[in-house]
Length: 578
Image (cartoon, rainbow, N blue to C red; front, side, top):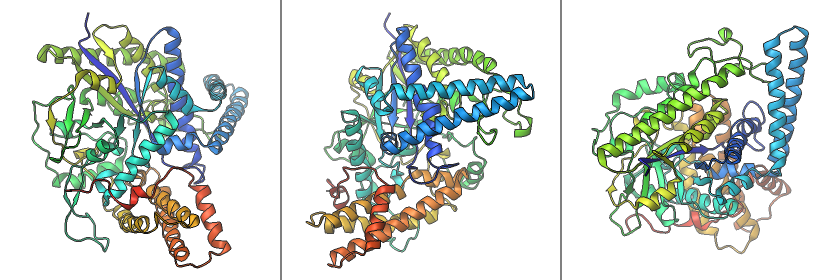
């Protein structure tokens, strides 16, 4: 029986650059947690399904900045040490729980010891090459790999087209180097899209003037061989947008309450459907349009919502309450309103007993929605379910098992066919053209999370640095002085790291505010000092020993994008309106 529709999970894996920038609570331990609880478990459940004879299809977006970190030898060593520490901590917990005859806690401490021993064994079995395993799964047809903006820069608020061009070109270059082929799809950072239109900086940084033309995001994608991206439902159809994180962070509710009175949602366009693929273009130029897939709203909240979705089930492992000094978790969610003091002890058996029901319900909803679309239109639509990968395992510890069970169940029904997005694009060959407004996944579909009273100061650092970087690149890209090129290349890296959208997100959610403010400030200071050093060298002055030590420290600390190219920053390949 022919399928009634197609389905894919789209998992966006991303951690900002943290190597050499702290350890705990924000730093390399953050990356290690995500690797132990999300990236390796995803690999594990895919392997288990394949061993069962199931042919899963999963779309995974690995951000370039994450890929660079996972490939770094210093991280591989750090991660192995992290796992050893977690194993030791579990054994110390076990001694105490045994001493006080705390049987359920003792059982869980034994679970943690085995969990991290198994994780270390899996890591070693991959020769510590996580990217290599994702590449193998890609080459064997189980995983479709997408890219993202190089450092997760927030595209609509970047002021220079050169900056957006560099984010895309570095993404394609880095992805191709790691995975042996260029990406066909991209996860726009924060799912944030901007069309082409005359734009003016939203803050006064001392350089604001008259509005000027900027290219649409899709133009950069088309020029660099990317075929598709993903947007939130409200960008396609209009109507009210429900931000995916607003019920997890009280500070976002505070910000949104201040912004909501100024927000007027677009009228909903009922004729547009997230089951269809559309082509996007915001100019009349003769560029190849780029396809857009749309987040399914009905399945989204079943997983995204910590209050109403599956992860909020009281029997699942609580994310927030940890036992120190080891940091292991021994308590259940209990309820969405429970204080940490009221959390009950976690039962692995009770939690795992919920997976079949939740996964079965999710699979049933997918099939129901696709059957309805087919009955209403006579067409086999696609249901794309995009999520942050770290939700599965890191935030929702049982999430990888949920993924596994959903993929297994969908493999058993003839009504739904799992598919990579690129394969469905080739199958459907869309012709319907749409224009999209500017927006993101944020509540209301706009930028308030990244531009508000707490974060506007960050753009006063970023905007002048963007302008200065374009000047430097144009001036020195053809220099025959390798030291000067080295300095300007490093300045470009610092600008790209400074431009990461993570810093504004962490500030607005208050989840790591001090760390984010410090990181952006440090990259800004390093950028400025590198600019001064570049001008000093260009003027024929001899760098001091301190100058060279500073440069080498920057290169050692922020060692990513070895193939960075000053041409990306010097000029736009196809300037706006020309």
